[in-house]
Every structure is written in C-alpha cells, then in structure tokens.
Image (cartoon, rainbow, N blue to C red; front, side):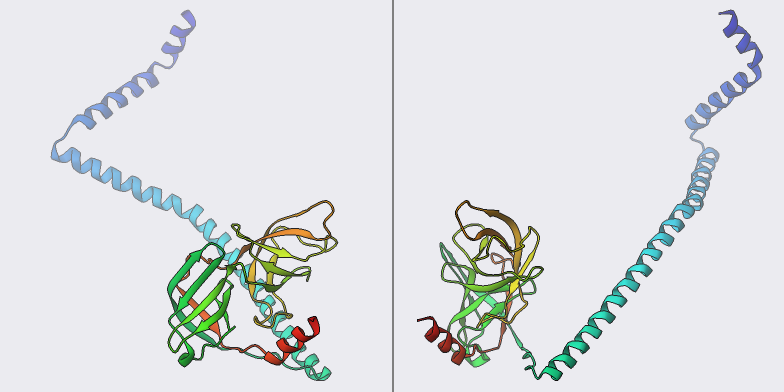
Length: 275
C-alpha cells in the first residue's frame, strides 16, 4: 500500500492531467451546442484526411507489387505467344516439306436449343437450324466448353442432336497429356467413362480428354472432359477411367454446329475391313 501511495505521489501531476483530459472529453461529448458540433465535425474530417494520407503508403506498395506481377505475367504470355507462332510456322514448313495434307479449316453455324429430351439413356436436343441452313447428318455439335454431340436427324428448319449422355454415343478420344487412346462412352452414370485404355498407359486425375484424329465425325483436339477418377480392377486388362464432360450438357442454350461432312468413303472402308 505504501509503495502504491509513493507511485501516486511521484506521478500526481500526470494523473491529475489525465483525469482532467478525461473529464473534459466527457463534457465535450455531452455538449450539443453549435460551436461544439462544429469542432467535432472538423475533428472527424481532420482524422479522415490523416487516415487517407497514411493509407496511401500501403496502397502504393500494393499497387507497385500488382504492377510488377502484371508486367511479369505479360512478358510470360508474350513469350508463350511468340513460341506458339514459331511452332505453327515450323509445323507448316515441315508439313509442306513432307508433302502432308494440310488440315481442313471448319466453319461454325450458331443455333439455339429449342427442345431438350433427357429420357434415361436417350439424351437429345432440338436446334432451330436445319437442312436449309446447311446442317447435315453426323455433323458435330459443340459449345465454348467442348463437345456436345452429333446431328442424328434433320428437317428443313430444325435438327435433332444426340448428346454425349446417350447410350448409343461412342466418341474416339485421347488423353491430351499422355496421348493414350480410348473410346468415350456413357453408361447411365453422372459422368462418362474412357474405355479400352490399357493398364500400362499413363492416365492421371485432372488430365484433359480430347477428340482424337481417329474419329470419323469430330475434328481432333476438341475438349471432351476431365479425368476425375482412375482405378484398376483385378483380372481386367483395361483401366477404369471416369470423365466429367467439359460442356455443361444440362444447361445448353446456344450451341455451334461444325459444318464438316464425314468422309463416307472412309466410313464404308472401315466398316468393310471390320467384317
């Protein structure tokens, strides 16, 4: 107790000053006359200006870091674009030197989805484009996400498309990273399966599956889906691979028809050789 009293006597001036400031603050806060309101408004405004000035420093540092990141990102993208252009030019030169056929360029016909049929095992869509628009049997249907399906019936102004979620749909596919070939099918589940992929081939979760050059309907390289699961069954020669489709097949509104007609001579020849 004696020690506490000594401390109070030693710092009594500071304690009295603090008490006076505290009492004055309470008195000022409770005073609502015009002069005090003006003083409080000026004080708040001054505090806000001071906070803005102090806040400039961290904001400036954040902007500088963001600008540095964007400059580095822009440089990386520019380098990638330059490499892609060089690779494209080199590919064209090599194909010309080897006498290989140039890949065809395709045109896209936009169409609205005006009807949907999600019956079990028979998923189809109806488009507002038909034969008079250039739509033909077996033409591919795609969206910005990837493959939707193929045209299976046409009239003058409408067409019906078979989606990937149809039990008769079979799509020649390839794992983009490892180049493993397979057949993409739907067996009634939430996703699809990549069949006929040997256990020895490298397929991992997250790999993108695209159309392969072996398809007689789809151009190569169009996204089909992403590998979500892969496992092996004892005694089976092939790996079980589950794939989530790239295109949202249940929320289709606008699609594109690739106006390429399958090479019927190739299809007939392959069917003849398979007999």
